[in-house]
Length: 550
Image (tube, rainbow, N blue to C red; front, side, top):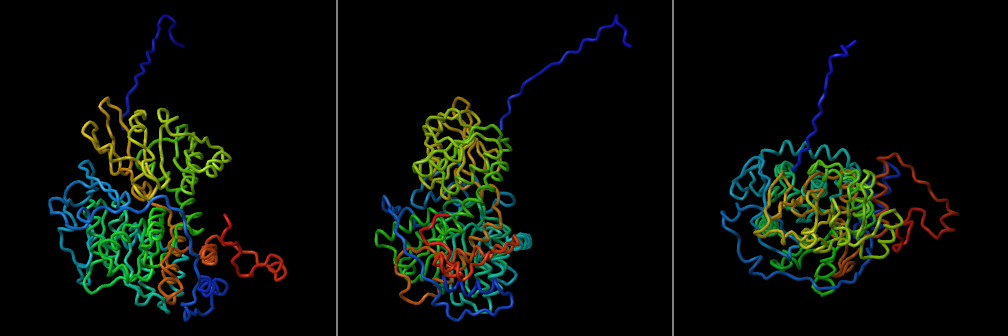
């Protein structure tokens, strides 16, 4: 018992702190998914499949910067060491900046200023540090474990070498997953030279591992714009090496070759493009009558749209946001610009965390889908002062303008999930009255004169591949589609494909999907002869018409 005469007074002090922070090809391959002991027959690749030419309406013609601006000269060493900045809004919109950064985790010296040799004595590459190859090999081996369908395709086709004689120049994200694709192409007989389509997405150790095996890789994380174009040029312009196939992501490589090496471009047998931005540019060239080689639109294949764009972004958006901001998203007001497949994936992920999600859309069909899924459809100007997070995924330009950025509240987050960095008007933020403050890798505070801070991620570039990683399994689906598209274009007889843009046939999409079902121990139901006749289908597919919307 305490003494009643003694009074103990407890004082609780509270303080608040401010925190700053081919039908035939498909049939030949797919026969082996039924019987593992089947023999592979790659003899008649020329009758692989007939893709469907498509024409999409384009509002304006492609524009190129002046040759003297982009092609006529390379920078000095001093210029190359200058701070990096975002490039390739598409490669057509360039601007200067002194307020960007590179991720210099180990060595400030530009790879272009270093002489490196792999264990085979070759110096035909330019990566951050060739000594990281062993670590990169481990990353690739991990990726292979979840890309079993692509590895299966490699094992089945490598004895036939369907890409023998193919000289493929590629411009994609250089990650462990794309390394599995590149090594598959090599195993199928191709020679490859590779560069990065994004200055922030390259995994340096993976680039080193590829270079160690003999693949000519020119890429490293944190390139400047000058480095970016220099790397592309080194891939294309190599004495005694004439590329005959292009694998592109965004269209920068195609654009560079078309403008600077037109004679080389005319000898290309086919282009495979996987991004919205790159496909849009191909359709522009086709409409203008300037596309002199056949191209395959992988982006609009079902397996790319419904799996890479939707499911990949549903998981990777959270990974990128959490790694960069450490923010709790429950209750946050989030606006997602665009309700296509990428937007749908982002919305589903953030809604699951308890965010209050609104959508902006120009398309009434997508807007109605958003409403039926429980999201408010708004104009950005209506909510700009209350929003905590803005995520763009439209493929358009100036979706978030300087005027809107000026009206955002302190501490709000702005990022982009589209391929190109045109969606946020980052160029307008590089003015004397605004201060840029690096917080951590790929995270900047843009500070207004009144002290307001907006958090900009990856300088407006693709968030998930710039700031985190993406699910390996989903990339296996896209990579398998790309590999089969390259095989088809390379082996197609003359005249099958004209100078146009083609979609993959439904049979090819279905085959790619079937390869990945074994991972889930999934068993497809088979049609009886009577059922197939009733539906007017071949028992082996395709099961849906080309116009079917999944």
